[in-house]
Image (tube, rainbow, N blue to C red; front, top):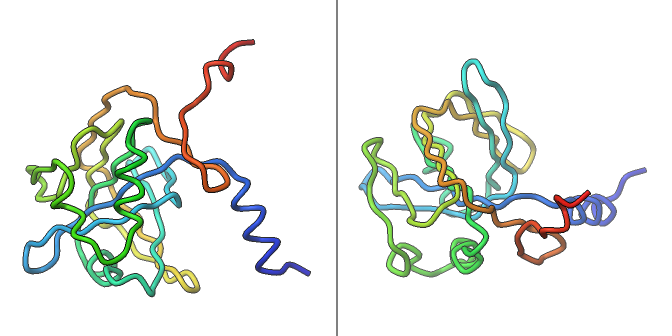
Length: 162
């Protein structure tokens, strides 16, 4: 029998990359949050997915919106990751960002950027899964930020040594 504590322990021991997903409200205000439930789905068409908790204050902005941007954070963006994971703060006043041609808030310093149009949303328990079709991509080819057991870091050089 599976229990939530065991499930959380297994998932917490699974290293992931870290992203910040951004969009704009109907009033044109930027919103964003830290996400590690990000993955590729398809090459043709180019699709990605991520999930958002239904209790997050910006859930409806993302779930009912038509576009979003996924920022694969660079190894030196741990502060940005924490900022977008913190509730009750004006996140965009504390970073450098601009509005893209796709009308997404784009955070400076990312490792990679995928701007997407919503392809499909899927009800998934206490989360909503968003599948996005990539309409613009930019690769800065910098080391990504990694997350494992509540710790941030970059890929150790020893990882590549055989």
